[in-house]
Structures are given as structure tokens and as C-alpha cells.
Picture 1 (cartoon, rainbow, N blue to C red):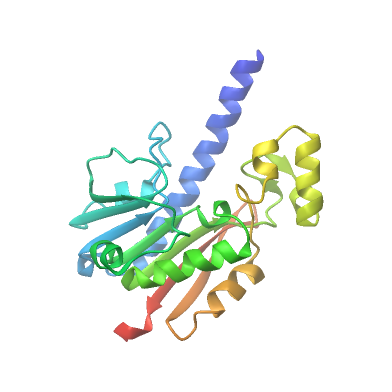
Picture 2 (picture 1 turned 60 degrees about the vertical axis):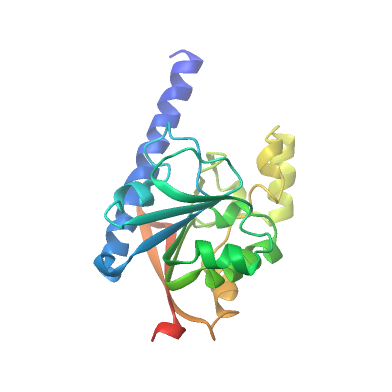
Length: 227
């Protein structure tokens, strides 16, 4: 098998798995949230790369929600989004931006592991709370799934994070070796972040399984101000 053919097969294989798991999380979200009561959806970390079927899948599949908005550090051209704010979710937001972008449902699909260190991950959740009227949904891969889905390497990511990054540097994977680009979370770390905002919301973490292992986490948060 030629190398480029193998790479295409490898990428296609992982893409199919990622899409399947995201569809599973989407189905769970629909069971837990009455989508017919949602007037607007805000997607956090929208990608302008629409080549993959798994990209922005929550927005595509929740197309019955009347208004879609986006906050992303990429320039989003997709016309489905009536409002787009070209900004990092870890930045500071003024009152006008919050009022304009605030939505019933705020979704972050596989982005919290890409915003940087723990402080940035906390800031992301804090900003999502300020932007939500009813619900927040967060998905992220499980650090302790045997295969790391970004690098496609087995088990090495179970090492201490600093050691893992050194190995990635040694392997020439400089992009993912930087904490600002990849900072995986396990269930405990994710819970610790969410617990910081217990006064603002109730949450539940759902385990998503693949081959008997927890591959992803789906978090559904309900704002307390709407109880």
C-alpha cells in the first residue's frame, strides 16, 4: 500500500469513528434537551474547514433551531450562521458582545482541549456561562482512551503531560506538543473545572464508549437562573 493511500485510509477510518461518536452524543443531547424550546444556538470554536463530515456537526444536525450564531478565532463563511464573532472564547467579552451573542443553547464540540492551559479552560467555561440563557453543552475526548485521536498514537498520552509533550517533540509533532494547542482532560479534571461554577449551573457528565473504553465525555449543563 502506498504511503499516501495509507494516510488517506487512516484519516478516513478515524473520521468515521469521530463522526459516529459525535452523532451518538447528538442523539443523547436531543433526549436530554427539548430542542423545540430552543430559539437560538451559539457554536463555540466553529471551524471553517467543512471538508470533514464531522465538522460543525451539532450545528448541521440541529438545523431546526431558528437562529445559529458562532464565536470562533477563524473567519466563518457558512451562511447558516446569522451572527459571527471572530474572537477567541478565552478573551474578554464586553456587555454588548454578550447581549448580542447570548443564546438558549451554547455548544462547544471538541474545543476545550485546544484552548490552552487550565486557566484558559476555566475562562472558556466562565465565558460560556455568561453567553448562555438555558443550556451549555461541552464535548471532549477522554485523556485515558488508549489511542490519542489527534496524534493517533497509543498510550503515550497517559504519561505525565510534560513527558507526553517531550515525546511529541522528539517525534516531530511540534504543533500538538504545545499546551496551547492540545491539553487533554480526564473526567476528574473536567469535573474540577465544572465544580468551580456550581453556583451558576447544574451539570451531568455522560460517558461515551468505544470498544469498551470511555472515548469521550458529553457534558450537559443547565443554568440555575432558569430553574
